[in-house]
Length: 236
Ligand SMILES: NC(=O)c1ccc[n+]([C@@H]2O[C@H](COP(=O)([O-])OP(=O)(O)OC[C@H]3O[C@@H](n4cnc5c(N)ncnc54)[C@H](OP(=O)(O)O)[C@@H]3O)[C@@H](O)[C@H]2O)c1
Image (cartoon, rainbow, N blue to C red; front, side):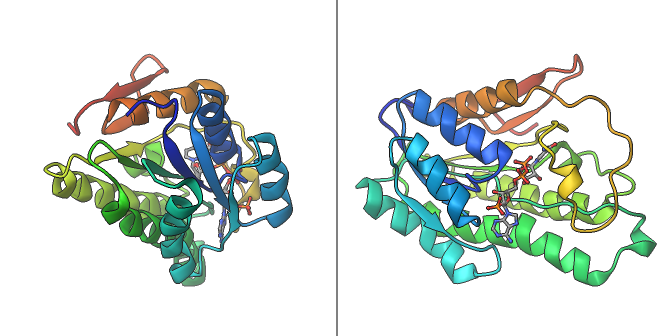
């Protein structure tokens, strides 16, 4: 998929990662439609991305999540890719974490992105792509964030299975297992406080890697052994 001229829905464009993704895609000539929860921030950002189509949604509105791809396809007169960067986190030992917190994490980090991407699949052409920002915790679950790790692993497992399902159709499925970045995400935890964190990885480099991976039809972006990101064409 060539990024220039492609039509891309970015869900969670009000966030740090989602906003940076939409910015890079717009800068490389993609036509974006964007969705986010915060109406004011979404409208302001959409103005900066050429006045692109924008739609407010909430992760708890599953029908609203599922409607986003169809809306974007109509607004853009076509749709080549959908990226979700929606998410929230909680910290604390698992015996101190409530089931309500787990329910919230699963709703925002797994159920909502899955609803968005599931509805997008039949709308995408051969060579199209769906992508989600999961997190390195999907493959390396983090003590003190067991419920967050489990919610991200659920989304990552779904992406892995769907990638195999979509192979014949030629729709690519990208799992962006990004490392910690200093976006303030951890400080917005819905429960608990973050443990001391190492310096965050570079947001711009991570986002460029995700956009490159989307364009190349790659399967996974993950941290490599040297601290940088590696892109894998296929799931290991
Ligand atoms: N930052 C990191 O270190 C890091 C590392 C690996 C993976 N990730 C993942 O990257 C994604 C984005 O993180 P970020 O750093 O950009 O954090 P962020 O700035 O806090 O962005 C979070 C995004 O999720 C949206 N969101 C949260 N709850 C929602 C709800 N109930 N309904 C709809 N949207 C909701 C936010 O919408 P509003 O702003 O409109 O409320 C925002 O767009 C998350 O999935 C996170 O797990 C982050």
